[in-house]
Each structure stands twice: as C-alpha cells, then as structure tokens.
Length: 212
Image (tube, rainbow, N blue to C red; front, side, top):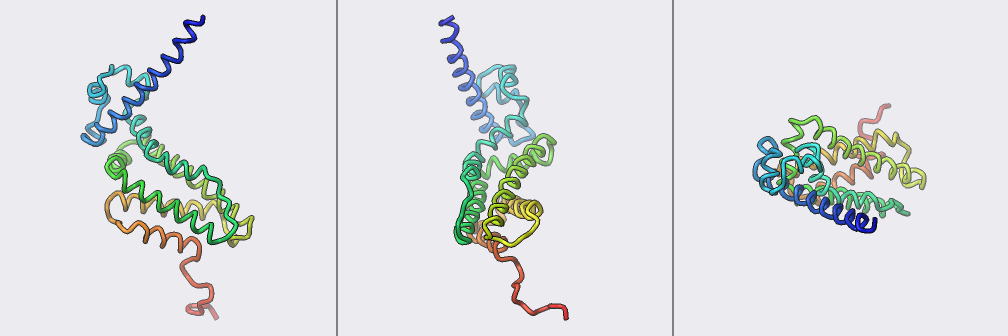
C-alpha cells in the first residue's frame, strides 16, 4: 500500500511534465507552421511523445491552442482576481487604465501566438467559443466593478450589463488592432478609452444641439 501511494505522486509529476512538454512544443509548432498547417502528428513528433499520449492530455489541436493562449492570459486573469475597491474616482480610473493598458501590452508582447489564434478564430467553432468565454469572463468582472462603483456613488446610474459589454467589446476590438500592428501608442489608446468610459463623449454642460 505504501509503495503504491509513493508511485501515485510520481505518476502525477510525470504527467504534469509531459503535459508541459506538449504545450511548449505545440507553441513552437504553431509559431512555425501557423494554425492550419499544425497537426497533432507534428506536435507529437517534435515533442518525441506518442500520438496517443497527446490525446491522453488534450482533446485535439484546438484544445491545445486554447490552453496555450490561456497561459498568455494568466497575467491578466491575475489582475482580474484583485478586488476592485477604490474609494475615489481617481483610484477607479487608475485601476481601469492599468487593466486596459495591460491587455494591450500582453497582446503586443505575445503578438506571434495571438496572430495564430486570430487565424484559428476564422476557422474553428471551438476556438471562437473559447474566446467568447474569455470575453464573457471579462464582461462579468467589469459588471461587478460597475455595480461596486454605483453602490459607492462613484458613477451615475446606467444599465450595468450593457455598458460592461460595450466596454469589453471595445477593448477586444483594439486588442486585435494591436495584434495587427495598426496601433502602436498603447498608452494613448488606453487613455482615450478610459476617458470615454469615465467622462463620456459629449459634455453635459454643452448647449450645442440642445432641443428647445
């Protein structure tokens, strides 16, 4: 019994090592081949593990790519895990600015694999579903933060779910603009988005266009 108990942690450790090897190798293959040309056979051959071994850890190449991108997003997930509890509007603005800027910097830093993921989004329903789950996670987190801001009288009353969705979809659009190298001044774009979020596009004191 004791000998069997000792073997279980060892098997678990070997499994974790093999899983990481597959993910690391898959990243190299995806970057070299792109999404379409990457196959489980190429990953298993380069990782020097059995074809069946890859499938014992993952459902297929889409599952592997989703896990690779999740690793890229870990830093941002960690930021979402930090409680949003500002006491002033200035603190709230700073927190949101850092979140948006971090998302852009991660997109820039990991542009090669994000380009592969972008290629996959147009071809795979499972990849699209996974990315939608990521977006939904961000929307849920933003809605929670907006609810906190309203409760603490830091913001005006509005439909939390609609605004959270609009905000995240805007950030999502710019993430792919960064990936496509259409935007390079990340601090500037992040600041503009946060200004729109916190102060609105039109001045409430403006008389232009006011109905009589």
